[in-house]
Image (cartoon, rainbow over all chains, first blue to last red; front, side, top):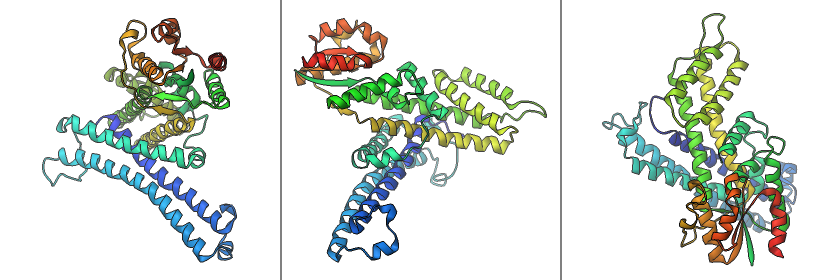
Length: 171
Length: 236
């Protein structure tokens, strides 16, 4: 709170965390639903422990479907992990390169933008945004149902509508 | 000749709003329905996409910076019987004087914070601090929600064409739109297609004839309400 880092830095850290979590949660839920449906033939909300145990699927089918689940989910986590790596890179750069010595590293303290190289900071921020963009693209293309059902603000939320109206006025 | 449709950010933003919320949202929704019916994927130039994301980040950043300024200022805790809103008004006035170019962000935040303070009634330092924390979290959610809505519209970003030339449009349209129209012209020329540029921007509509002339009728500026007619016209 006492730092003078640009607001875009705060937005980048917050949004990247949000999308990283959204990516993992939405993909995991969708893939579990797909797996349950494939094994039981039932919609996931109707699947219980008993229906799972009574699944008509052979061991071979279970193995194949589980591998598909693992491959698809891990494809998504590779993308979300990249967000984590890039956020870490930005955070560590800001923290380490602004520290007078190593004792100050990873301690809560005011950080001045003047202690950092603007070009390096921008490059790391760009990289983080690009990785978030990849998560968003993947969610929109692979899990459109999931992303449309996760509404983070209601249509009528005044904060959202005021914001969009203000942007529309200057667009 | 093939037809492509590029949508301006004004139309995309209006599409992110519900039709019941804003007058422009209804024609924007109509435009996307028209495109869906015609089987046309709406396109966005890289310049428009970058502008959308950059402006969004900037504005959210401004709001978050203002929240940080509020956290550093004295909490608006009035003397007994006083109203915290009186103090809040003063805090925002000082913030406005301090920060240039953040007017819209401050107004959005002020509306939100004042409504939260009004709901809260009696404020304490702890409540004020927790209110600011939740406001910061809400701002991030706001960013993600706008991005989510944008992603769901399903626009396809077209890669930057080679040979973008802004010169023919320099005296015709605003500097901020130069890249967008020049990108559309380069895209239309390289694909040998007609590009319908759908926008609410009055200045671009005003420059419609000149843009047509400079692009040999390849870039047509149109409004959402005329989109269906324009598609039919181009098909003929």
